[in-house]
Structures are given as C-alpha cells and as structure tokens.
Image (cartoon, rainbow, N blue to C red; front, side):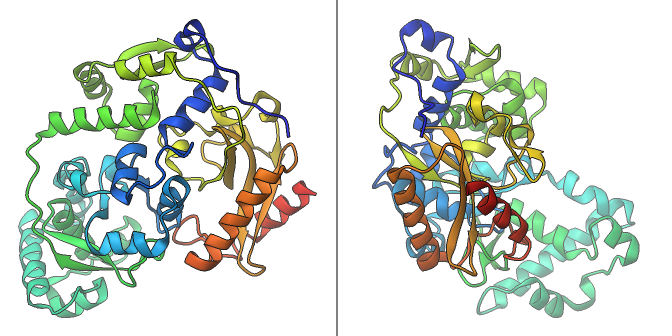
Length: 408
C-alpha cells in the first residue's frame, strides 16, 4: 500500500502546513497515534473532544480506538456519572466528561428557542412551567427512572396533545419540551434504559446539577479553547459549524483565547492556539503505519466536518454507488485511516459477523490485523455497529455489498 504520510517537516513547512502534514497533525492531536493509551474515559474525552451520540456506536469506538476501553467500562463510567450524554453545542448530544457537565449544558438551545414552536401552537410559558414542576414531583416520588410513556401515564391530562398540527411541527405533545428544558437546566438527566449508549431508549431521573460559574461569554470562550485544542486548528467557518456561535461571538471567543491565524499551503487560514503553532513547528509525522477503523461521526471527521480534506489526492475522485466520496459533507460509510489519511471504508455485516471493507490501495498486514481486532471487539462488546438510532443491517446491506464488490 502506498504511504500518503509526509516526511518530517521543517519549520518553514510547518508555518505553511500542507494537507498531508495537517492530516497527520490532526491524527496526533486526536490521540489516535497511541498517546492516549491507558487513559480513562474522562481523560480521553477531555483530550480528543466530546463524542457525538446519535444512538449509534461512535462513543464506544471513540474510546476503544484511542485507549482500548471496553464497553463494560464505558457503561460503568456512565452509571457512575464519570461521563454522560448531554445536549450541548448546537443543541446536539455528545458524551462528555464530568468536569464539563455544567458549562457544556449552558451551550445548548435556550428556553426561548425550545419554546418557540409551542408558542405558535397556542401553549403559553406558564403551562410548561407547571408541567416542569409536576414532572419533578413525579420523578422525585418514583423508585426508579421513568421513561416518557410512564411519565405520560403518571401526568395524565397535564400533558397536552397538540394534534396533527403539532405532529407536523415535531411537537406531538407538551412533554418533550418540558423534559428538554429540565434537562438543559440540569434538574433532570436521561438514563439509558439498558445502560447502553447505542440503543437510544431513555428514562429520566432527578439530578440537581449545580449551575456553572461561567457566564455565556465564558462558556463560549471555553468551548473555542477546547475545540481548537481538540482539532489542532480550524477555520472560522468550521468553528462556527461546531459551536453554532454567530460570527461576532466566534471572533470574540477566538480573540479571548489568543488564537492566531496560520495560512496553509492549500490557501485556507486556520485559527490555532499559540502553543499548538509551536508544537506543529516541531511535529514529525509517524514513519510506520498506524491503522484505525473509526466511525463516520468520529471527532477526527465530525468536529471540522471536513472529510474531503482527509483523502489523499490520488483518492479524491474515488466513487462508491456513483457518489464521489470526497465531495460528501458527511461520509456514507465508516473510514479506515492511516496516520490521518482515509485509505478505505468499512461497514459491519452482523449476519456474517464480519467487516466489509474497501482498501483503496490494497491491504497490508497492519490493516488486516486491525480489521480482525475491530471485528472481534464488535462481536464481543456490541453485537452490531450502528451509525445512528435507525441504522439496521437491512438498511446498510446495499453499502455492504458495494464495499465487498469494490474491495475485490
């Protein structure tokens, strides 16, 4: 297999980094080079960034790929609240470490945003406030967490059905909004019904998380500082996409954390933390293969949503099912990496308990070994590898067949 990883850069090339160098640098910053081995779940998420959770297996693979953490340990960490799934940046859910719970929650959707749809359906704020109080009372009296169906039964007519118009607007009843507001305030939390992060069935329990000492401006600054550290550098547009901040707030946060502009050889401008500029100048990409199979929603890909930049030039025109892969905002399959460069794609075939993979330049012993390791891990820990809550073996069969055909 042809290597796409550059030789060690000089200071001059580091100050105008090439795409090849930036791929290896992001790989290193994400801890995918083995530097996070032996760390805890909290430590991995603090170093590499929050793991996107959409009812899929990404949080598990995020921790296994970087630190070899098995599912039973991850589930124990969730039970003990060392890590937790919370709504945060852009209102999206991520799995993050305990030290981030309070301020990360403040970055989610505001009460005004959450209530806007209900207001158009004739629901006033007082009705939702009363429902919130009733939910807290019911959960406080319960012996165990309650799922939405159980809550609805206990609350009875306090939960208003919003009819067909509500269904069209994604608000069939008033219950989800009230639950979302309580969760955003840290007054309740979601608990996976069977303890797993990849099943997306939840119950609710009281929480009482103390409020963050960071105000809105401080939380924005902290997120931008973390984000630039997780990525090793990002464009202003990429930062805005991840954080959901306005351009004005983004610029203010970048200035507050002392971020500096670094022109790249490709013509982009990255914002980087000053310490990372120095580290990049001294950075030498690994010489030997470092193979990882990651989820399509892994932090390496999703935090900057720049999958197209992670293909080598020779592979940018490759197609699968008549789609040019490098032109997709989000990968349709999971990526196989070597030191930050996508060298192939994969899906899990649960019927045959195997990974279907297409390696653009053929397989090496290191690739074969890692595929076998991930196959065994999925069989033993997960049973299947779902991308998101509605993913199923039948829904991905066409892509499994296409990867098999391409890999022949």
